[in-house]
Image (cartoon, rainbow, N blue to C red):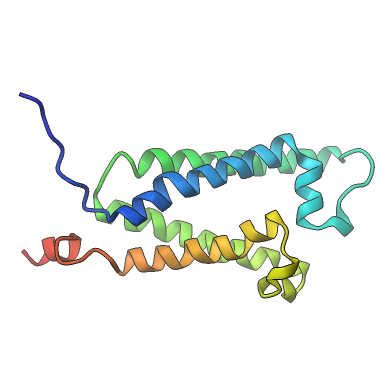
Length: 159
């Protein structure tokens, strides 16, 4: 007899965001931070990007950043696929929510305009601000179990 799996307790929108969209975006970030370092720095802050050769220390730090982005990609894609346990998902996503807040704080040095002047955003600004806000809001909604409905985890807890 073929074993069939129960439908996941995690709503489809959250699965799409955390199992596909965010891992792909962090993989792209890892690729750019490691393989396209000059472009990465130019898009992050053109005025302070090196004009000539990339300083060795900067290259090392960007490769370390790429490694962390790749770790995030793997952790999210693999750990969250390994379970539908809501407690694991909430704990994992809470950690990412804290990281989101740090990420949003980190770009304040560019200037306050980066948070609201969307017409001046480049590709990295879009990844650093609205995309991170979207992820942070989705994490809060997930932790609060918004969208789980009566068949979701909240109903199972009551049973």
